[in-house]
Amino acid sequence: MVMRVVVVALVVVVVLVALVVVVVVVVVVVVVVVELIYKGSEDDEDDDDDDDEDDDDADKVLHNMHTQIRPNCRPVRSQ
Image 1 (cartoon, rainbow, N blue to C red):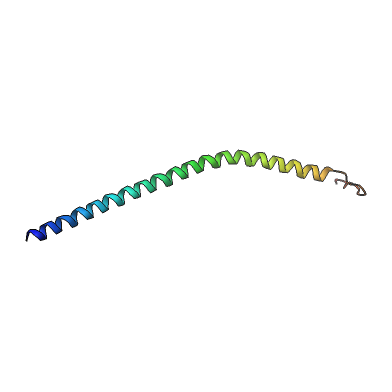
Image 2: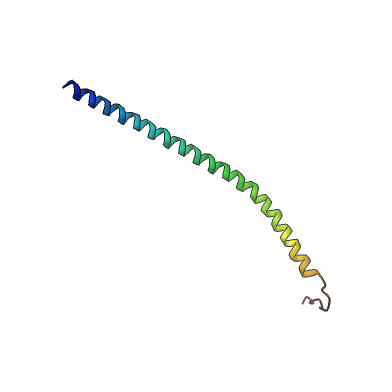
């Protein structure tokens, strides 16, 4: 009889410890994911500014390509 009580008590303790471990792991994972998402959104905001600059550079390159006079080519007249 005493042996059954000890076994049941050990099982209850093991189950409670396992639940605590699961809760701690879930909380850590959620915190890490939220931090990554938050940090990622900050990085995206910074990247947007860089993308605008890159777009401006690309527009300049395209403009220069279209306005260059190439040898043996006549410029296209605008209508």
